[in-house]
Image 1: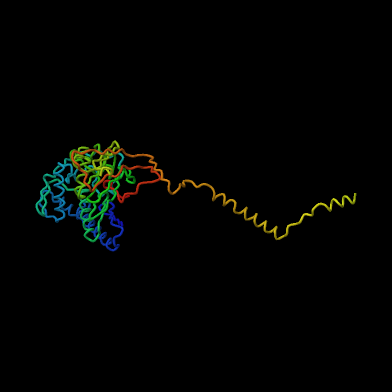
Image 2: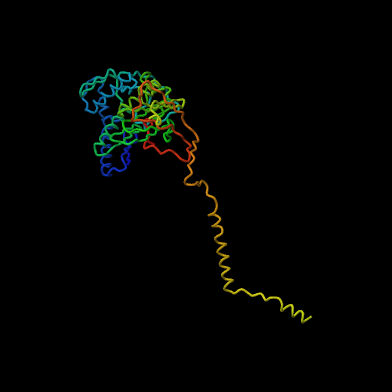
Length: 291
Length: 111
């Protein structure tokens, strides 16, 4: 069974066992959609009245936040520390300077965009979080990007199972989370330059997959949404797309960004499939024959 | 002469004319044959792409898009819950792989 809707600027799909009672599936789908709507309104940076916008306006001061917001801040700072800053929730300034300063649907593709000046990143270590209060350093804004999408997919998939599904797969624009007692499910990895084509396939029965790519959300040559915090500019490296597996989608999001920015050395400790600019696919995920 | 001629005329067997009923029957048979012959020819012609049910389907991979390199990591990192199945192909053969249940591709923007 499958149902889909649009949220967080992308398509969200929910899959479940074909034998599921349709009324149970319908209720689970409604729950998933409500979770996405709720978290989108909390974490969007394109609405003045969102909690994220309110927190960003309060940079330099302590501000009380909701429990989910505090949790996302806590997890994202832990991710930044674990990746030595390759995953950085404070790249908002660099992202806006590069041109992603409004909803992506409103951004025009420019053949010759003006080169953005590098914007210093890495101030995640100055963000303070204590219980339900957060303090950003002055001049710094948060943007959780795809991390929140993955975190919401985790919440939604677990809620769908709690609503009675034997298992559920939630796919939020490529952030895939499987919860419950699922069979082996094949997930295609899209071609970086042609989303309609599959370049590889992996099979998962649990956990999550997330993909980071420099070929999506582009608004000009070399201009895309994935900021390399080391240079404060859109990333330019040998990896054009990275798909990572982790127990949760939030963790997979962090790992996929690290994989894309770090390159081949990530294969030592992250299960992932990398697509290089040369066209090669490099993976450390055990192949079907060896499994 | 007259007698001979008369005698020879009498020797030739008189050809019996077919009855109207028989003629009509033959006409029906000929007409039906003319009508159905083209259909029979069409039905009998060999069919394109038909193979016997027991024959294995040939798989023709026209173009391998990617070369996949599986790297031996320092530690076994791929848990049992994720398995690499295949590199993709395009062009396809006569026995395509089953479509995956979903895809991942990096913050896909809906079109």
